Image (cartoon, rainbow, N blue to C red; front, side):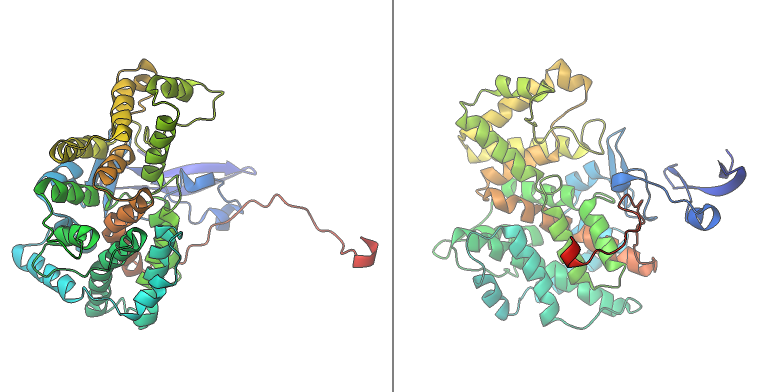
Length: 427
């Protein structure tokens, strides 16, 4: 293989080096393209553009492979806890027991939020979408912790990371409890990170609460599965905001806003809303599968297929099992979930979906679990954000430590050419 590619333009030939990743991914290094040729590339959505080099996540959509720092998503979900995975993503290696105990204790010790944040929370009407509330509260943390992070100081960097890992679940639970009209909870120091997520979300003031093993296991798996996913929309947002040397809280707040959209983190909410619409129309799954196959019908079957995975989403296999376990243990009889099971069964046996590899993805099953746990539909995306937090932190940390330049995409201008100004009275 040549270690460069040639581009011929205006009878001149230019050479650009090839770069290769550790998993044999190949790319063309075009950072000198404009300087050498006066040209830029045009790539809407950056589908063919590598914006960075990263050692965090490997994703092979054609073969359905997802690995964090080299570890398969299957092994991590089967053998690890979310807090171990967070440590792995952020710091690069799985922790030993001493490192994990310290990480846990640091987070628990910092699991307090300034009481004035409650005033900000109270200022939102109940009709406010939880993602808007969560983004605002995360951004508000800056006001209570105004000092900037010195990226050359390991202590400063770790303090910021611990602070956000500790406080973010509190903010997410407070957002949920405001929607439900419940008093606000804090972490319980005797519980694990994931158990605390369940405790702060679901404990009622007049009852003891001990989450079941199936519930904790399902939440643990969901958070791990959502923890990282390479250069998606929200992660790219975190990196590009951070590239201006914006702080960690501001960068993550921007990532939350990017995750909000129905084409990204809001997809699991869109799945349940679609199922509710099908129920209102009589619950006929065959009718809606036919609509999904009709090119002239605007209906979209949410939760099937994936923009990156051209095969089965590896996360979906894992979470389908967890969904079955939770539904069986809780004995839930929900017509919406029955419609979901019907859609899944019929789509997996339909030649149209099989040939196009339109399998249920992680959003399809995660929405089912969240609904079974009693989480409101508009809280699904904040739960996604809670899982994605260590991924955003790790990407922000990597980008800053690598001293990457500020993000500044180019464009192809297609507007008017120079025009003479016309005075107002002559227009």
